[in-house]
Length: 423
Image (cartoon, rainbow, N blue to C red; front, side, top):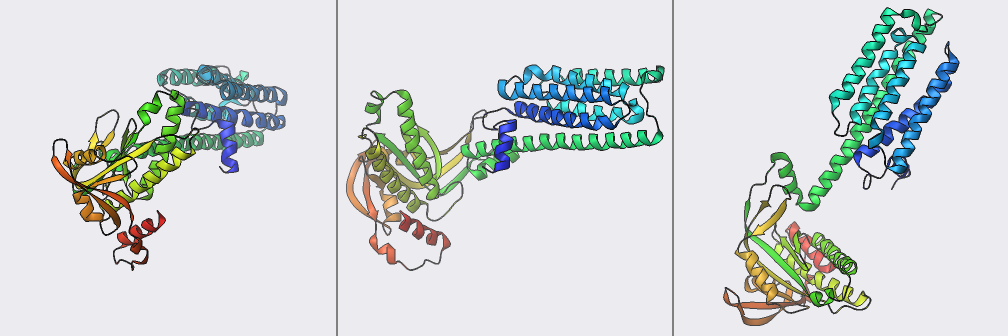
């Protein structure tokens, strides 16, 4: 994290931990506090220096106090009205002691309303807007009826200088406030986008954002991978929940990395089962080989995890893969789920359940697609629930002659060979 960003996180709050409303309150209160304290010294050059110095110094100190209460006590919601009333009281006294509307005191009510709007956080806007309108209207009325109550400037030059300074200061403050708001909202938008893209594939997430729905799509060829832990159910009885979830999270996080590295798309996890697919949502020619590569990485990661665990786990992984036509889409309206349907999915699940611990079990269709890339062991015909006897093969590794294979003219296969060598 860059030094400036670390400083902002310390001053305003961590976007990952603190809500947007708290970070906005912290930003606005510290900006107002610092500017008012600086303004207290600038007030010493005005016609009534003592009163204006005290007004700016006390209000600036109060704003910083609100900042510390919000930042370190998380009380920003309860400070909303106190904060905004402090601003209105400060501006009212400043009106009387600093030339009224003649000196541009009314300019300050513009950023005051911007501040109130930024900090509304679900409150009724008409109330703070009505209070602001009432205060400004009352001040103009009092100035009209009792002009002697307003401390005027000793000369025309002093009035112009102060009016110009007030205008520039208000313009600067309003710009800072709008900058804070737009950047905070942009950060929240990016955070929401990242969250959505963690749930859905990028192209699917973009379609959902643009159209509020995702059109189901059929693929003539895709590959589905299922992986399931053996020994996990027995281990769950001996491990406490926190330790169990921690280990499963570490293992599946490494699986996620393998899926990304081999160009597959993670679909979902169900308990200790993991599902991924290749050739969706973006079609490609290498999805079957990619899926086998991913499965072999899964097995390496599983062995490494079982050995590194304290004590060593007797967990093993069954992986089943099948290829064929599928349909994809997003189901649900409240919690979006990108899923895959079709007989290909059912067959891939059967390949997993009929597989062996520590092995990658593939169907006949898969074998025909990947036999030039991997060494496979024929298991013969095995019974499959609901499908009768099916030919199955165990993938034993990458063919050694691939190391010397010449460059393929297809760019996708060139990338595939690079992944093969990187396994």
